[in-house]
Image (cartoon, rainbow, N blue to C red; front, side):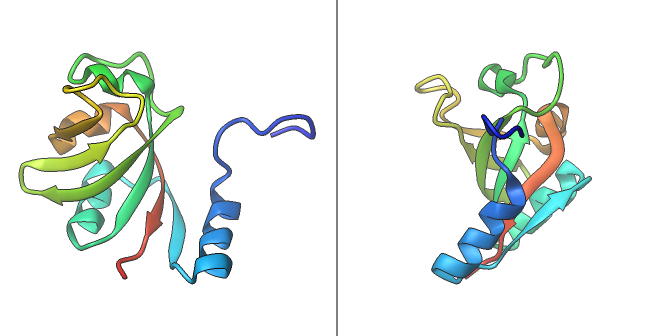
Amino acid sequence: LTPERVHGLVYAPLVELLRTRWGIGARVAVDLPAADLAREVAAGALAIASVHPAVRRAPEPPPARGGHLVTLWAADDDGVRLTNPSGLPGHSQHARLPVDVLARYYAGRAVVVEPA
């Protein structure tokens, strides 16, 4: 973050905007393991999670974690469902990943939007 440019999503201001403008409860989650994030999504939360952009080619190993945002909108024992607008059509724009695969891409930080 510099005065000239914001690099990526600034999580706390987004949470504040959700709360004040639309009355939506959310929080910044830092150092949250992928399995815990998946449990929150399974319980009805929505998450905007930082993953490596190589997630569009999962399960290929990523070179690092984080730097790209995806929405996690469902989870169960088989893994998480995510939407990645820049994913590959028919492959990774709307995908299911096992939690252990997600963990390889996930940076451990997200905006967790509370269930309605």
